[in-house]
Length: 277
Figure 1: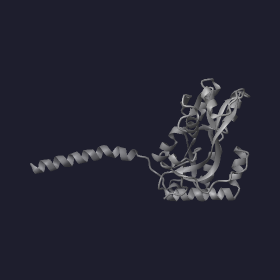
Figure 2: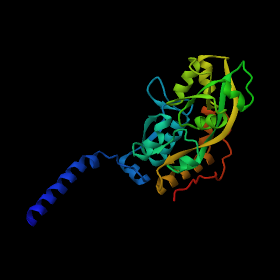
Figure 3: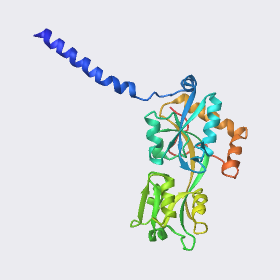
Figure 4: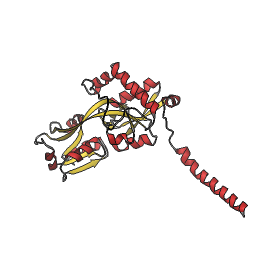
């Protein structure tokens, strides 16, 4: 009787192990150090797929933009190829934490709540979150926002700021990314949107002279993101950012995409550490 129980238990354990094996084999391989990235010969970078000038795909199918240029320089620093994975706003952090990508250069505003899920690098670029409304309308206070149906990219900094600053009864429609929220404005689905300082370039192409930046909510800094606890890749990115600030490469990228001097970056941000522990 004891022998039968032992045998049956062994079969059950073996069966459970067999069932678990495909899940183990299909799990993503995490490249957590520069050495591992160099060994595989490429770095997989999560980037925004449709948010010029930060990250976008050209008509030729090439990933381009400010973040793409910086990520390409980092890959060169490591001596590897770069592979881009275009992402929407909502799936940036999941793509990183599940191992789909090695790092994010994806317009990641450095916010304390995000720092609980990912490790930020030092900041490498700055942005401003704004409210965009009809040029013909007088919009000077947060209370004025209550007159409009407002579009935002769901989960982005502009979603947070519009939700925080608009009157409680304001109609806010949330879209899966920057491009859908801009399209909602130019197609008339919404009357105004929360965005960043570069939205107007795209809006002007579709409906010139009709909209403008009305209110400024927040100045933000963007950093690269790695997984929590990955000290070596975080240190490598921080050293790389220091290098391109010092040697003028970052200014060249600013000149190309932003056409302003490199911002003066803070040494610290409340609730965010630039160094993995």
